[in-house]
Length: 130
Image (tube, rainbow, N blue to C red; front, side, top):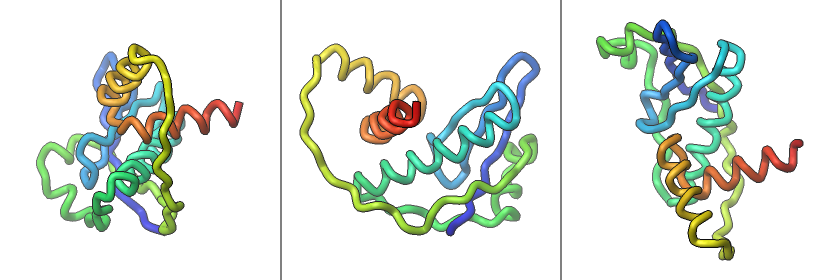
């Protein structure tokens, strides 16, 4: 199991934002600290899944010292997020859906730091858990 450093940011009139220095573009938010932590775990897992699906390398975790050496990171609170060392085999699929829905999915996924595949996987997992 690997552990990556996440950074929680909070502005006066905002929710708790979470970012991952090892994964630029992987961000999430939570209304409170517990929700932010849960969302961080989910966001990181989906981001790594998307990288694996795209055949991109998964970076090694950076040290806390290296991350906190960046001045902008010192304004945040660091915590560890664990991810399984074993990624499930990904399978390419072909699906059909209305073009406007696909465009809306892509827009939402991009705006929220997901790949299309990562977003669709997250939506399916949430629907099946409900």
